[in-house]
Length: 253
Image (cartoon, rainbow, N blue to C red; front, side, top):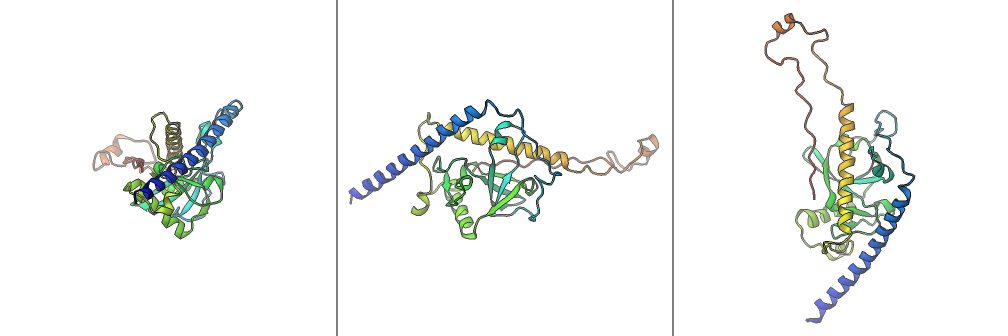
């Protein structure tokens, strides 16, 4: 009986070593390509334009659970050169929880999951990088696909197990997770920091663009202020705008 756990552990370790080697190969190739591409890279990307008929031309109702959305690029060079797809995982109060897809076809850690989708940009979900955002912000992007209900339900289960409760997953799901991250000098730490910064930058830029395009509240007084009008006001601050709602707060998984 004591041989079985050892054999299982050996198989798991071997699988993790193979998966890590595949990911490291992808990482090394990605770094090499980016070093070459940076020589001719543009200084800035086009900002999202929700009036151009391209970005923001959302004709699919309110962004909803199970949808896969391609976000428009931010002004930074890196986000322009790297398409960012997100899955709308679930709705929480007035926000939507979105999970980005990895730029690699192999999961980097045990908090990234192989979706089983054929398209390379959609093969791996970065569960650890989940965020809360608004439907208005997502509507600046493009709807590219929808998960089947059973696949969407499974994605929610994996997210709940690995991120919300940090519990073991069923055997079939475990095979779709990457190798655990243990060593402090592992290059995957650099990858995680980079992905976090990328999504922070992109969502912040989209939020700023959305705020710029919000119509200002109409002023009660259309003519210049005067002592007579001030005397007619019933309370201090009458006619002033109360300010815009606060930004949504990011939530790590």
